Length: 417
Ligand SMILES: NC(=O)c1ccc[n+]([C@@H]2O[C@H](COP(=O)([O-])OP(=O)(O)OC[C@H]3O[C@@H](n4cnc5c(N)ncnc54)[C@H](O)[C@@H]3O)[C@@H](O)[C@H]2O)c1
Image (cartoon, rainbow, N blue to C red; front, side, top):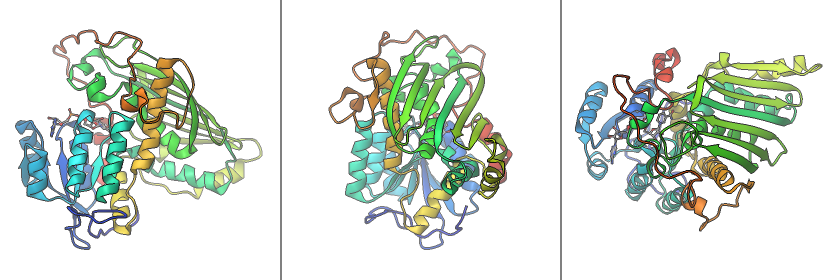
């Protein structure tokens, strides 16, 4: 990633009230809120950035988790309350690593204190909540960015560069499959599998990683036609959804989001006029996970365009954090911006609206006052609201958090940077 020094952090396009305390070149002072599964990846990924950022404080309502996290990562400030953290630690940047249902209120508290936010996905439970944050961002000047780490591997940058070169031709067909497996015991964690705390099933929480990348590559989507079902898991939300998406440029794509697939894979495929580009991985990719297959007659041009692109950067939190710090240093909006995250969240809302209403949903159709603007399940799911009781996990340990661990945490790329 380019750039190795950071200036003060704070607002983009407005005055920072709470941020901006780090001097030019000083490490950005980060606070982590929520010290569970993904927080460890944040700490590890920040540590890999070679002193560009330091964790000055952490907060969690669970004092034991908080202590263990702070001991492990040498964090000096410990708080069981976000307000106390904001007042006491006065961080430059807050990483929100709490369950999704808490993101809105916590982000609003940070922005009200003038402190920028980097929030774990999904940014909020609904478009209405995200629009509230957008209003606060505009009013306060501090930025709100969302973690969508798969945009940041060199493979994605290489694809974009090859597209821009013209060698691939127009994108015509795409496939985006998140075929993951989560057993019943996964839903024993209280915030999982509930609309009011997780905001949905694999569409909102798992496939979102993959179709965020799909949307970042293909541009504006135009319309979604979808089905969603709860087939097998003790969850109030869906455990599978399938969408057909049409894009402004004409591309058509299928998007499958499943928690029911014993052979797990994350698979994206782009069929351009002159080449097929495929990515197959699970929770994070490197350059070797990409394959390019030229159409007859286009071998040399496609190979040259692909080889010319960037390489060597696996997807992951470190890559996004570096890009965030680069943007801050350059005074530009840190990725993934609220507007970009909203496009992805609107795709989620459209998938649910189409599935539950049984009709295609166009981009822009879910406006203020629409039930799917207020909550992802709209007026309600076609299946009974209450999930089946979650059986005791028994001696079987809970699986890793829904995305990154263990694959990303164990990845040599993540640990060696
Ligand atoms: N980007 C990725 O690949 C990825 C992977 C896993 C999880 N996530 C996201 O990260 C977020 C957290 O997921 P997780 O798996 O780490 O959850 P988790 O349950 O392991 O951790 C959440 C932590 O937040 C704490 N918490 C709860 N209420 C709080 C409050 N009011 N103030 C402070 N702390 C509070 C809990 O005690 C817990 O320690 C979710 O939004 C999830 O979707 C993202």
